[in-house]
Image (cartoon, rainbow, N blue to C red):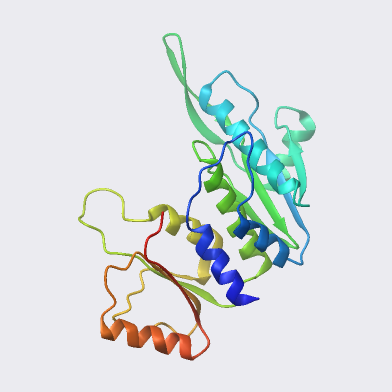
Length: 239
């Protein structure tokens, strides 16, 4: 049900450590799979077991996370882009290459690598192509959010209330979470909301991250959102 899925989205926002080679899906991800009635197929494009540490680590992460989803009944299509058949499959998927800098003796060159996951949920497709240097738990959350978006498990827009940045320098707080939501919710994401103003009527699920205080005006707007049937996830102490 929707309330349960809201709790799942809250759990997906919190990272838990996993070994890349022996990865187990978080309970929240398992519940997302249980709630999805559309067929799920994940195409896993492996960059190979290269001597380059970053490429080898990415291959282990992709294998570990994909195998964990496979163990829960998700169909996995393994793709080797180094073969003619695999290259054609990658082109059909629409997965573009990632450029990596390669150091060879006195030579530095750019190398194009195809790697990532393409998540099909029914007729909906989500492409996850930013996988180099990504931790297994982060990749799992990206896949889970892609499934949530593709299956339409959240009916309506998602609102996001983030804490204010401490200054102009450096990344904004929780920028990774925002990027994940932007990638998977697309036009259904309402970022940069502020509870000093009423929550937009089209917001179904409101995600409030690390609030330092909840003044009376903000509480009134939050109550009004809940009173009209909306849901709220308040992460007081996100990991």
